[in-house]
Image (cartoon, rainbow, N blue to C red; front, side, top):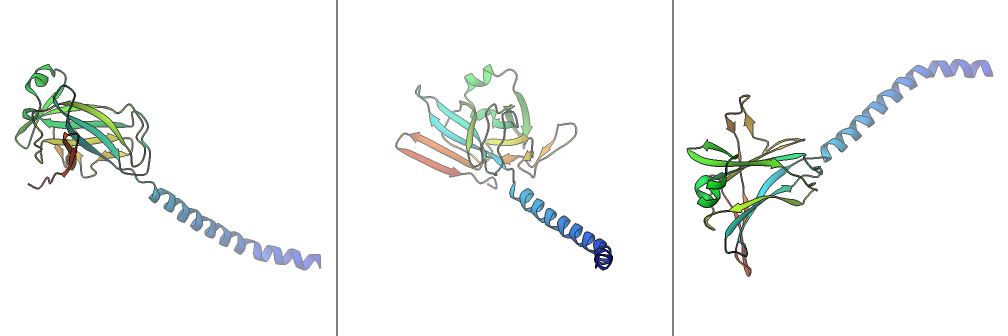
Length: 193
């Protein structure tokens, strides 16, 4: 009886080995694909325009993590471009290190820095604020791109190797305008105008 069992074992060993290996690889691939596809990174810039206690009109920019992966401190570097004529003239005169860029025939001031706080999924973290001249928001007043550990956002962004030309820069689509405490207007800015 032992001799028959031994021969049957070796006759079935290699087919079973290869079948188990193929099934194991397939199951692992499917599980890996599901886990990888469920982890999506996405981020965008939002803005809130309101008056502060001194009566100055301020714009507050924040980074919204609209994906489902957390960003650690220093994982996100924001590049926010503001039309120079939208900023208060006194504030503009104090800007020394900020770079000026000509985008679509307008002069923009670039504000960039690493976000020093974590950004959790579906949460917003404040980035930078400064004084502006009015509550009026035009489609191309505020532009941005984010350089993160998971890539650049918006995904359509392309930057030449020299860094002189940027294409596909994002417009801030969600701007909340608060003219007084009782009313808050949520604007969706259409960049196609």
